[in-house]
Length: 114
Length: 113
Image 1 (cartoon, rainbow over the protein chains, first blue to last red):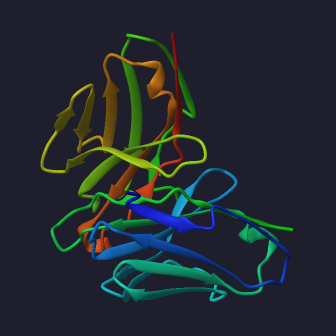
Image 2 (cartoon, rainbow over the protein chains, first blue to last red):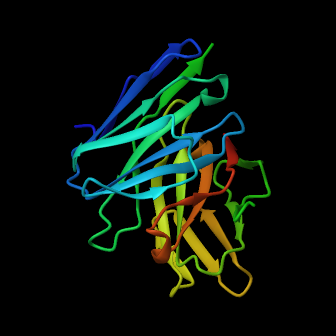
Image 3 (cartoon, rainbow over the protein chains, first blue to last red):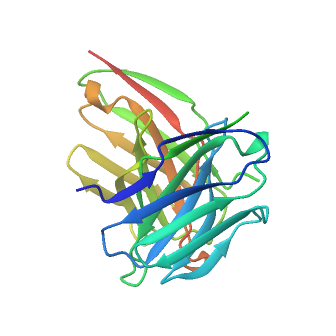
């Protein structure tokens, strides 16, 4: 069973479109994250949700809107896509309540904006 | 401002020898450090971690060393195997920062037979 899954794995779209990436974890973790890996392979956190509550928002344009319908899901919606949004987006989860720092990552979604 | 740095973008080692990957950090608030391994087209996989109250943690072939005064940590892989070839990311976290991970830029390790 996949612990952290993301769909789709690849997403090619045009500038100006709106798209969503979905993430699900079956580890029973209380916290979920979105990271962006840019063209220089630098992994940087975007958002974090703990028990459906936003706890980290790292100066991300408000075109990006995360939504957590429940503890096991954290979706990322992107409005008015721009060329610079092209990157690999990773979802992750961890059990913060138990003092865990280890985060478990999904396989990534490669977004290409043309 | 890069708070976690991996100054070696790549490292080549022969099978059976030791691989040493290095990482430096600047933020003294970091209290937990992790190493992740990443294969192409996959997500990072957690490898090993160390709390700031320790200076060494070992798990099989992998050992992480932490030197707090120097703000430096290293990952030792002994013996190195071809399957270890991947990109290794160092990451740091602070409880005060809601445990978000701050990643280094990665070191590509190539283990040749």
